[in-house]
Length: 456
Image (tube, rainbow, N blue to C red):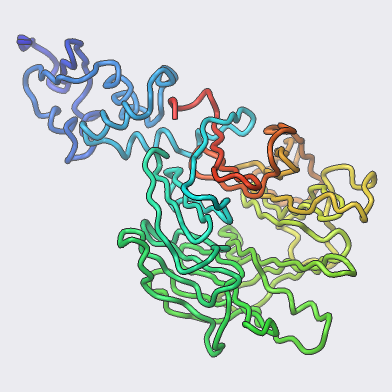
């Protein structure tokens, strides 16, 4: 088609896409980056014809202008948008608009798709990608399967483990993986077929297994337990070089029944406090006991320790947005919180968000429950369903500075409570998605808001 050049403002660019004329500014097109086709179109002095789909181009131009995905995009398949975005050289903009955490609508989540895994093994652990793209790594049996941000492309590598218990992406295409029955934390290169770059060990301990991993922007944390199970510790490594920096929370066990026998299996960095939260629990004939500790890594000092005996946790999560630590009681099955601002104060109690007084501590309702935080919400699995807890802003409780300790009010919602489905075994979040694993299922559920994004 021949399009005659028309007089226009020097800053206005006209583009003919599949017979439909679009007009925008040079500034908008250059936002797409110097390597993109759109940026090249900004230099055209006449109307340029592009033989592509105008409806898809309209969506992509809206994304460049606003950074958001338009509501009309729900009528398109994501594969078509991916192909068009690659043609124009603007796929990163599509990734950001589709998987930005700001698009996560906790009160409007629906199951959007099922990610099938090869083989007969159920997922043992899952880990999101380190960026906001919404990709996922899944350990199942001796394999690790990775899904890209679109969840359309996947790759699988074989590890040396019979089962992976700890998994963390430390950079694109590089994972840290460990197991409770195999020594060392392995650094796995996904680009080279799962080759082990190096293996990190607990210094001066001949054989030690990995109980948990975590990271901050500077550090990699690994919880180790000796093969004889008579000592445990947390090693801190430089995240960029993977060189060991220091050791924290070393516990050597003398005699039976010592609480120090419990290694930490959950490690979470609290950026706002510059603290590392570690937790671990153990079941015995006398009940379940455990610990939650907060460490200042730079000074190697423990800021606070919470010893758990009565209604010990099944799982623990920390929310910086809500300035609180949450647990689900293994006996009551109820969710409790403790304000981060009160760390270190004597006898700070857990506050129950549910109906604690109606539960017997002998019922063990919380066994296997998982709890995680994302954004301004806390998600707790209960059997085949999920409870969603959100803070109700009332008076000074909603003070953004949270400089006054007051009673706080949380509201509960429930979803995914299909009694016909298997028990939930894992929860994690990436971008605008929540990923769910279930017992004896060789797949991962993806939950998203139907009012956001496109058909995935």
